[in-house]
Length: 117
Length: 113
Image (cartoon, rainbow over all chains, first blue to last red):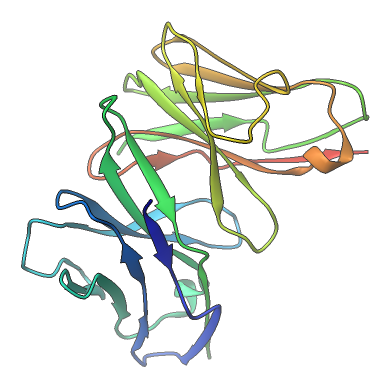
């Protein structure tokens, strides 16, 4: 079975600094997707970034980038120039196609990030 | 972008009553929707997969008769918590498959008193 591990329950970073959130996963699959979601106090789940396992190039979305190490099964998120609005719970998620044709997420336990002014 | 509308955002009900939560896909059709439950300071746990026009698929350990799911149209899925008890109090979130990743509703906080 697939598992997703986020070993940092809480982290803090000074505004404008850079922070890296770690995520490791376990799977025997070769075709899958990895995501980082942000859940602010409003509880709305917001997609931050996505990575396809077959792509070697690390995904980047503005201030957010990932370090995808497929062999090590590691998928860390780097937030550059941290802003107060980045304060949220961050979930790493794994997704693969099911035999039924649907896709299911497996979420990590989350990392609570606080950006300090 | 794609929007998933979830209502109500908050509901308080008495123990023993039933509560219905709606999840609508706006401006797109969703043949499959997912229902999650999130306890305080914990991750999202998939409860069931809702399939339009057919029975929902429940995850192991989720009571089908307690959590009734109906996906009667391509834009609406509902979750009914039947005979609610205080232990059913939680945050419930729906999602639908969109590109590049699933889009989530804003969630429903259920409190059973």
